[in-house]
Image 1 (cartoon, rainbow, N blue to C red):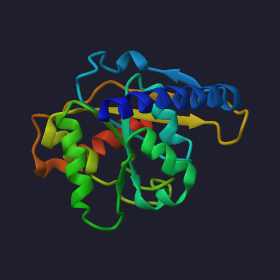
Image 2: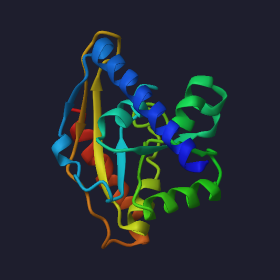
Image 3: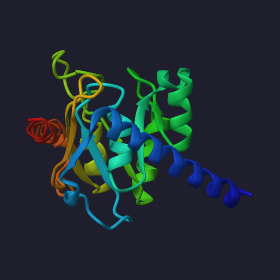
Length: 199
C-alpha cells in the first residue's frame, strides 16, 4: 500500500512541478544560471540556501534544482490551502518559529543523513537582510553536523509579473571540517555568497 501511495505521489509531484515551471516561464520569463554547479550525484545530500524576497522563492528553487528538495517552512503556511498542498506534495518540513522545534530539527538531520536535499532561507523571513535582521545559523549547523555541502542561491528580478526573474546557483561550499563554534562565521560566509549571486 505504501508503495502505491508513493507512486501516485510521485506522479502528482511531476505534474505539479511541470505546472509551476510553466508558470515561471510564462509569467516571469525565468532565467536559470549556474545549474552546472549542482553536483550530479543525486545521492549526495545538499543544503540549498537562498535569499528570500517573495512567496515565489521556495517553489522556484524546488522546480529548478535538478533534484527533489524538501523545504523548511514556517508552521503558519499550513493555514494556506495552496501551501499546505505543496507541503504534502514536496515533503515540506514545517518549523515553529521563535522556538526550539526539536521535531523539525530531527526530521531535517534524518533527511540529510538519508541522502536527501533540503532548502532554507538563512534570513528567516522575507527581506530579512533589508530589515536588518541577523541571519539564522540553521544552515551552518546542518552543514557542520552532517557534512552536507551548501549550495548558495541568488534570486533577482521578477518583482512584478512579466518582469524577468533570474535564479543563480553558486558553487558548493564545504564546511565538513569546521566546528559548531564557528556557526556565526559560516553563516556570514554563506550570506556573502548569496548576496554576490543576487547582483
